[in-house]
Image (cartoon, rainbow, N blue to C red):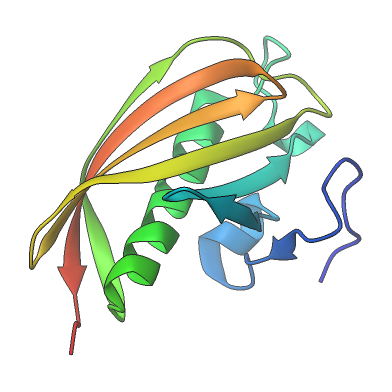
Length: 139
């Protein structure tokens, strides 16, 4: 496990331990409430684009991870896959920002979940994301 980034609450739990998420993270789960699951990462140099803001692909990767974690937790599924992910970039994320995803499930069927997420840097919104997830491996 890497050194804990500054700016995260004490109760943040690191969840990026393998594969791609481990490479682009670290990502953290935060306490949630009222049907919202929360995740965060701290913007490091490796997350920046040439313009000096967080790369859009990084924000989409983070949203995809957060929505996947949320869908597995809600369904008890052993896995799932992204069917579609739509992202609107609203504002820039900057070096050192704590980026938080607030994820909600909009609708759930036996095999599909419709999710939405808002990504924030403090109180500034940086992206709005919607996704459709296929549930795999529900017992």
